[in-house]
Image (cartoon, rainbow, N blue to C red; front, side):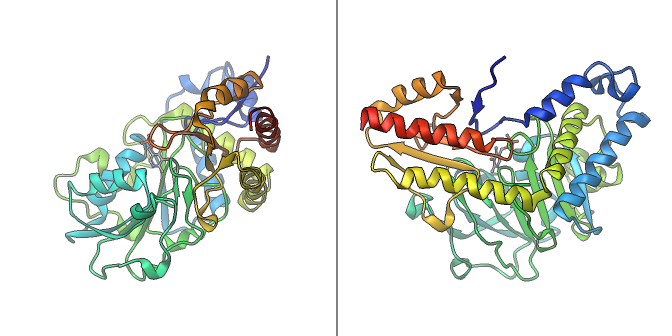
Length: 360
Ligand SMILES: *Cc1c(COP(=O)(O)O)cnc(C)c1O
């Protein structure tokens, strides 16, 4: 068996030890005689899996007790609607920071429910920067402020969390959750689709401060009401049980790795190695300003784009796959989430140097 280094932006690589454990437990989870996929979500076996996953996530992120943790369906894209549906609470406008493709999608969805004030946009830099705190025109009457700490496509990441005073801060952390420690108490809502840095597709983590739950717009479907999910421990309907279980295994793996501060050290080192390789050559380029470079998604271009297909083909032959950039950006993109081992970065960096030598 040969495992590749998979640089996919999502669904993305999972830690090999997690997959091996799932394989071992496939037919018989913990002497239950059942696969986790076959268990009732209300049975004691699955309840114990669900509770352990939540407890481990709370420990890893240091989630205060006045926050609810929910494991939902519908992806981050459903949160683009659930956030205004639940957080407007009688107000008519919300502030959004626009730093790229995912911010834009969140803004478009919010416009169905409220007036959107774009508090800052970096479109004039082609989304290669992040606004500073001074550049944010925040409205004190806004129901909340929404931002995207890491833009998966553009590869820009906030190096700070915006100060929004008493207005709740909402973050789409789909591609950065669990990559480094954060102070959860600064946020009203944190949400993330799992398929980048947590587990399989099909589950979405939503962390909401208690006081923001319970006042949705009147026509809100039950499935889009945070209160319904919070009161039912994310089991109002059948949750994606297997994805929840795998996410739990990933949380255990993260704890073994030294938690989020341990992970942050590794992630920083991995990203620095790759950016150094790009910056140290005239053959490769990354357009993002240095302070706003993502630790998770690293887009880069070749000086001669005609070589792109050859680069991808030769990389693949060396077990370096899914490096093709997003169609809107072109070039390459290496997504280097928690599960990408440092060895994958080293292999990519030496391939890049070798390719340049032969083609530069
Ligand atoms: C992938 C991604 C999304 C969309 O997630 P889905 O789970 O497919 O809805 C939203 N925001 C960001 C930042 C993403 O990376």
